[in-house]
Image 1: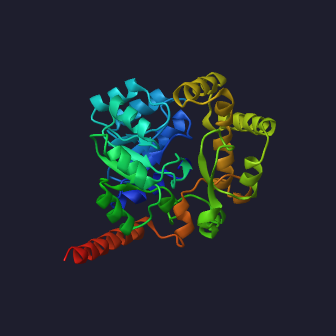
Image 2: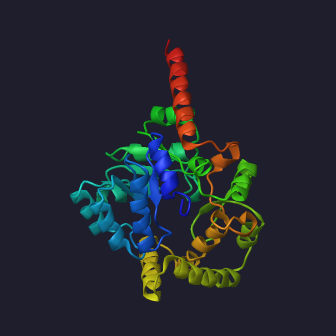
Image 3: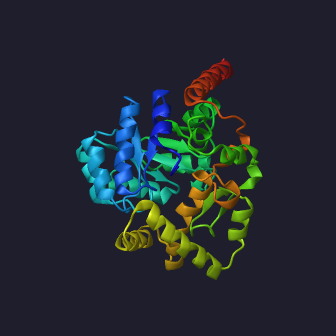
Length: 331
């Protein structure tokens, strides 16, 4: 949700009664601090932040979270135990996102207070296990609350997740497709036009399984040879450096953190630089045919762009109707 979960969208989400997470993984340290402060001016409701613990300026983000008493943090790749313990010492709830059982167990071991488990239906980086199966396997082996993600868009899905044993659901694509989402209108139209079969997983984009809308650009990357991918990645790494105002030292440090923490090969870690700049082309600059559009498969079933408050009300109405139906089944 980088460049998507902005202060405006997060505030609208939290004001509507859900719990928004501010996406800081694609921000430089100064911008990240500004985004936290701006969100605080737009809502008096609790919200969280999402970031990479290895990103440039992570120390400053950790300090800002504690200073401003941000309610929760979300993270995924390459967690740092010292940061987690610092958060816990100050009462910040740690809710990492994981896509595999082994990562769920490791996250609990490191001190997670709850987990978001994302099944293969989810957008962006995702695992290979469907949400229902991943949820079931994780629930059998962890002792902390579990939130389900990947394939949810409405209250019926919320009711189903609770019936499966989850404590709630997380939705990215559904809130990206709202009025308050900063995604340009032409890119939103591409999401509305996508079918379920157009939203597939590739490892060619950044070295990890990544679910995207397969436009012509992604089709080309998916069929590219390693040399072409390396050239694309180097160019994108330079742009990423400019976007985040990072030094070459910061970039090299992040590279080795990914190499160590994600079990990536050297070539995959280089390819990971491919992601932010190309995603920005579609999600910020508004050229969906020339960039990447991370997406959950659920986008293939979404046909409208409601305001956040209307969406949350609709979800809860659907949820209550689902409960009524279930009560009828019990009788």
